[in-house]
Image 1 (cartoon, rainbow, N blue to C red):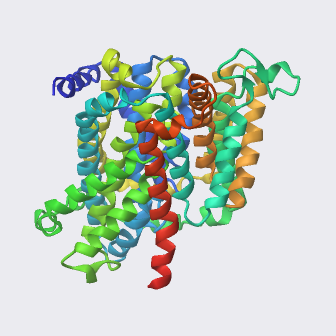
Image 2: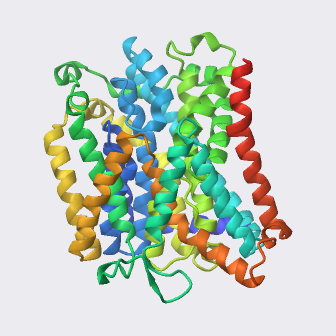
Length: 505
C-alpha cells in the first residue's frame, strides 16, 4: 500500500513546466497521429524517439505515456466519422460509431468513445500502480531458468496471437532474433556475424529498426495505396457543423450502458494488455464480443450501439496500463509502443525489474501519472475544445504529410546515432518491412523478436552453464516448469482447441 501511494508522487513532477508541456504536446501529437488513417502512436513515438536522446528520462517517459494514451483513444475519431479506424484497436468502434454518424449522431458517438476511453485508461493506470508492487515481489522469485521460460512464453504468445498467419509470425520473430545476434556476443567480448566489417561490431541499434519498420515502411505502403488513403471527400467533411455540447454524452445513455460494462471492459483490457503481443485490437475485440454476449439489447449491435462503443474503448485504453507490467518487470514489451518505451529506458541506462521500481520509482511514477492525467483530464478536455476540428483532420494534404514524415524519419535516425551507416540501415529495414507487410508478415513480431532475442539467448546459456550443460534444469525448476506449462496451455487453447470448436460448430 505504501508503494502504491508513493507512485502518486509522480503528479508533483507533472507540475514542472517542462514536464507539463511535454505531456500536453505529446498528447496532441498522439491524437493527430492516432486519428490519421495509416498513422499510429507507434509511428509518432518512433519519430520522436531521437528527442529522447537529448532530454532527461522523466520527460521522455511522460511524453511516451501521453502519446500512447492519446493514440489509443483518437483512433475512434476517423473510425466514427469516415469508417476508417485511425488505429487497429478502433475497428470495433467503427462498426457502431459510423452507424451513429450516418444517423446524425456522430458527435454523440465520439463523446461515448471518449468517455469509455477516459474510464478505461484511468482504471488501467490505477490497476498498473496497484498491482505493480505485487508483480515486483513475484518477479524476485523467478530465477534464471524461469526467466528463459518466461521469455519463451512471451515469444510463443506473440506468434500464436496471429492466428491466421502463425507460420509467418514465427518467421518474423526468428528474423528479429537473427538480426539481434549481430555484433558483440551477449556473454563474451567476441564479435559475431559482423561479416568482417567494423561498422557491425557494435551490432544493430534499435533506432534504425524502429524507424525503418514503422516509419519508412509506412511511407512506402501509403505511397503504394495513395488513391485509397487520399480518397476522403474534404468538401463533405467541411460542410459538417457540430456544436461542442453535442459531444457530451447524456446521463440517461450512460445509465443505459451501465457501470458494469465500463468496469468489465477495463479489467479485460488490462489483463489482455499484460499478455505480450496481444495489443489493443485483441482487447477491444474480446470486450466487444463479451459485451454483446451479455447485453440486454444484443439486437442493437451493428446498428449503432453505444454499449458496444463503451466496451471496446474502455478495453483498448485499459490495455495501455496492462502493457507496461511485463515491460517494467521483465523487459518484455506488451505491445509495439511499450517496446519503444523499453528502448527509452535502456538508452538512459535503466534496466527493467523489481529494483527499478524500488530504487528508482521517482523516475517511473511520473509516467504512471501521465497515463492517468491523459485519460482522466486530457481526453474529455481535448474532445470538448477540439471536437469540431477532429472531423477535419482527414483533410490534411497527404503529400505534405508523408514528405515531412520521411524527412523527420531519416534525419532523426542520423541525429540519434550520428551514423550515416545507421541511417542507411533505416532505409534498408524500411524496404524489408515494406516487403514483409505486402506478404502479411508481422513487423511487430520482427521488432519484439529483436528486443527479446538477446534475453532468450542470455538466460538459456546462463542456465545451461550453471548446470554444466544439463537441459533438465528447465523442467526441475518450478518457476521454469510453470511458464512451460503455461506456454503449452496457451498453444492448446488458441491454436489446437479453437479450430476444432469452429469445425464442430
